[in-house]
Length: 224
Image (cartoon, rainbow, N blue to C red; front, top):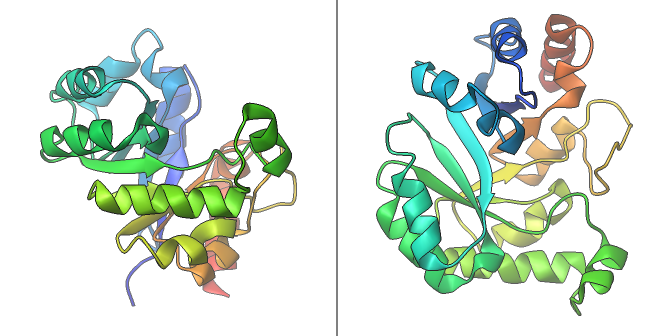
């Protein structure tokens, strides 16, 4: 059986804390990669740190959302980094998605569906007529048309997405404990894997408090 795969969210702007998170989450029982978002990438030494980070699976979560020329220019500017995955909002449109995928070379492009901080009420406020599950399924079809490498969706939409998107599924909004924080569509890790996710993204449930103890707790949950 292949190892379960987890991206640890390195949500900090401090290099020392990033190093601590990486050091304390090392294990050979599961495959671990590291997600770096806007906070870290825009920090003073964030990009330099990523440039020098070796032998890690790096998930750069920039959620690009712009016209085709701009997203292509963005991915070209990242070529000196050893990035494995890069996110783009599927709402950028089919043209931007196809163009980005064509220029991505060795970087896997992951399409972001509807953020886990949004629910049906939020979508209505924004102006969407579709409910979350309908919208995410529609977005997944767009990712398939654009031939993207992966899709980012909450655990609640995994089964629906898998019917129309046949590549990797990355699932944020994973909580070992029941606290929601700012995310509304959350799921336990064991349930997300059971639904068919390929990668889980876990942040505060691991990085808050005793990191080594938290990662051990996760391993015990996944072994049950």
